[in-house]
Each structure stands twice: as C-alpha cells, then as structure tokens.
Picture 1: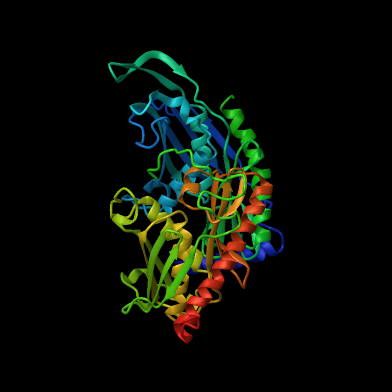
Picture 2: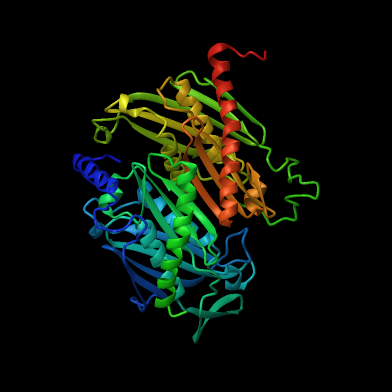
Length: 269
Length: 244
C-alpha cells in the first residue's frame, strides 16, 4: 500500500509517543478499545450482531439454509464466512470485487472460527452425503477505525452464538422446513481473535486507524475457550522476533479471555 | 483438498511418519537457481512432491503508473497453481486462497528486499505451482527468495520457509499433504536466518501455548536447513556445481 506523507508524519508522532509509553488515544499497549455488542439486530436473519470496537462498526448476519455438502465432507454441515467493507464505511473503500486485503480479512475471520471447531458441523447433517445445514456468516463493515480482523471476528462469533437453527426434515429426499421449531447452534468453544500491531519495536493491541496506517507488521492470534491457540496470521511488511511472537501469544490469551467474557454475556449463554 | 478420510497411520510405534520420515526430518529438497532465460532471476524447487518455478522481473517501470511509490520500490507477487497441479483439475483463474497466499508471500519477502534503493520501480515475482503437495506456500517462498537473489536484487538477508505442525499429538517438521489433511495443526513459517526475524507465520489448528512455542522453534530449525540448500543453489549457479 502507498504510504502518504500524512501517514509518515503520523508515524513519527505515534512512535515518539510510544517511546514515552503512550498511545495516540491514551490506551495502555495491551488494552483493546471498548467492545459493545448487540445481537438480534436483524430479525430476518437467523442470527445477527452489530458490534462496535472503538469507532469501528460491523453488522453481521447469519443465514441458515439447507445445502448440498462438499463432496469430500458429506458428514459435515457447511460454514462459510465472508467480509465486505461497505463503501460508506471509509472514503478509500470502493464498491466492486474484493481486493486482496478484504479477501485476507474474510479468510482470517473464517479460519479462526473454523479451526477452533466453534460449531460442531457433524451435528448439522440432514442426510449424509445428500443434504446438510449451511451457516452463511456475512460481515459488513459499516464504519472504519482500524482492526477489522477482530471487529469482524467478534461480530461473527456473537451472531453465531445468538442464532437459532430452523428444523428441516427429509421428505422424499428433499429437506422440508418444520414450522415453529428451532434449536440452539451446536457450539463447542468461543474463539476470540486478538490482533496486535508492531510499530518500531513496540507491540500494541487492537490498533486504531491511525496506528493501523503506519504499523510495520501485525499478527492476529485466535484462542479458544481453553486458552489454546487455534489460528495465526501474520501480515505487514516487517517481521517479528521469536521473543515478540511468544509475547504476542501470551497477550492474545490474556486479552482474549477478557473479550470472551463480554461475548458470553451478550449472547446470554 | 479432495482427499477422502483414510485410515493411514500418521505416526507409527517406531516414531516414523506416514512417508517414513522421522519427526524432525524434512522431505527431499532440491533447488536450482537461474533456470529461465528471460527472467532477471529465477529458481526451480522440488520440495517433497512440490514442483515450483519462480521468476523475478525488475526493478522495472511500474504499470499501472499510479501504483508507483516515490520514496521506495514496490514488490508484487503472484502465486499461481497450474490446473494440472492437483488431483482434480483446478480452475486456472486465481482463487481467494491463491490471492491470500500471494499476499503473505509478498509480505514475507518484503522485509528482506532493499526496495528503498529503487524508488518508482517494481519488482515482480511470479510463482507457478507445477505440481502441488503439502507446504506449497513455503516451497514457493523458498524458490522466490532464491530467484530474487539470482536477479541480483540487494537483500538484507535470505528468506527461508518451512512448516511445522502437530500430527498424532506430536510436533513434527515439514507437514506433507496427508498430514495436512489428517493432522491436527499446520504452521508455515518464514524466517530471515541472519537477522533472526520471522516474516511469515500462519496457523491452522489447535495448539497449547507450550506446543505453540515448540512448533515455532521446530519450524525455525527447518528454515535453517532450507537456508543451507538455498545457499548451495546460489553457489552452484555462480561458482559452478562443486559436486559434479
């Protein structure tokens, strides 16, 4: 990405603040922005959430419908997670096919949830190899202030936790909706992603847009309810030392545990 | 991708893996530098069953021009799989997976390339997967780094990549395709061996904090093995193959 002159000046200021142990918005290095989660905001979706992470805002909906399973995974339901930065979210966002940043965003959010086995997909089979239940989680970024990885991840997790799965029965090999019967999703763990930015040699949690525009590298680490690590993605044009990587994993476990408590509360489970 | 669940034994009672390797043993790795005539730098790698070509062009003029950067050069990378590289034909159009891998490879190489020496230019890296096996992104990165060096582009360090993972509750080096499908975790890592910096790390699968630390260390040890093979490839190209 092209770095503008403004970003270079910003970086100087941000770096000099970090040297004094301060961040632009006054947070501690390992302090995420306040997370506000509302679920059930889109009643027509089977599950939904609107979350705010600082001034980053994401609306996420889960649509649930019967589908054919993947040919090699006939005994599993389908989980697909997408992300889009809406043009109204950011002056730099453009409508059209997703660019590589957005593709990475969607894949990292998807990976965190998939690799944690948050949803027990084996419980979503209607008829083996024929018909399964599909969960389609679509994240829409409505306002941008950095760190979309975590914002979309929290919104996806909250909307999945709050969703209700309709009931289908196989009638003549066709999945048929059974009216009025819904069940809770088969959730095994709550994955929480924590993204850290590296500016100079300082590692900061949950970078806002100013920090995001001038960081040298970033890493997203997703942990599950047992405090184990289930997905990692490094990005950006610099590297991490082994020591920094190990420190990042500790930060993500500790910060993730706090955020998991917030996610648990709002979904009432 | 497309592999049926099977009953293969990932780790037998002698501590050998499904392809007969020990837990800390990488697959066979062969790298040859300077294999293409037109590219400014190139490399061919065989990493297990992976067969990959990498070609580097540049520094050269940027097209489209608006992408040019006034204070440094830019790096572009395309990781692309041939339709015949996998068991079931792959659509030749770039998939979302390929776009993501292109991006992480670019970001893994960028810290090593001294782009500040070449403002307003681009270095293009083209990677073609002729045959894919597990760990193709690491193998692709290894070839791309050698191709960059072969092109004579100033670099701070080599970039060497190797994966580690968890198979049958054990941390092992260099995951192959079967272990990727059936195993518990896969962690590709790229490393600058002299600057001791990790420039790519991804993880699919669950690891405890202790396993995570061991897995990163195992992957780094694999990167160091790869580094020796990369150096040999460049030595063979520029000073003649001493083994022949």
